[in-house]
Image 1 (tube, rainbow, N blue to C red):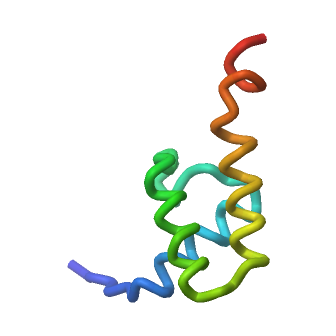
Image 2: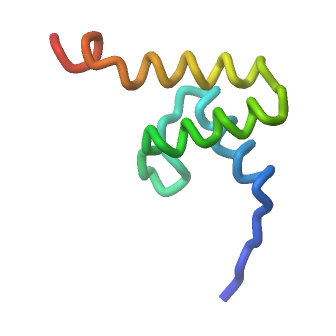
Length: 72
């Protein structure tokens, strides 16, 4: 059995990379929760990487927009 230890930084970048490719799910095809995406957003805000924050924020607004996505 092999264990792979990830740092917080690598974990956040992994999620960011998937979101930037418009993939709202992890490698096991489990969708990211809104709270997890907000956690990634806060992480990059603390790192002052605002370009990534913009991409994540746009993704959040698009993905969890109830009027646009759920009422058709």
